[in-house]
Image 1: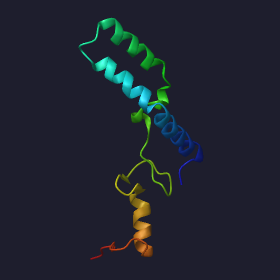
Image 2: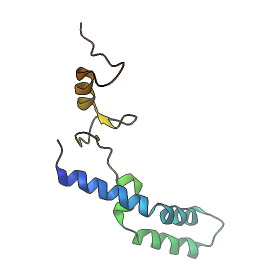
Image 3: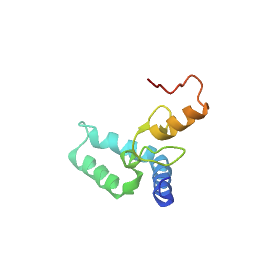
Length: 101
């Protein structure tokens, strides 16, 4: 089990990124638009820099939903490899069989 503080920190980042998603995407479109003047683009860049750092999408860590483990997480299932194996051994995931030879 991961530290509760790191799990909570990641949850705060998810909430912040959802909150500022619209504003951030509008400012990014302005910054990337080459048709606008350099001054307008620079002002948009400054506004973007003033937004909270943790509101960026790439600050979010991919964590296991069960244990909070940050590494070895399957994106599709949102479960770590270890939790997946345990659930498979308990027979809670249909179609998953532990191989042995």
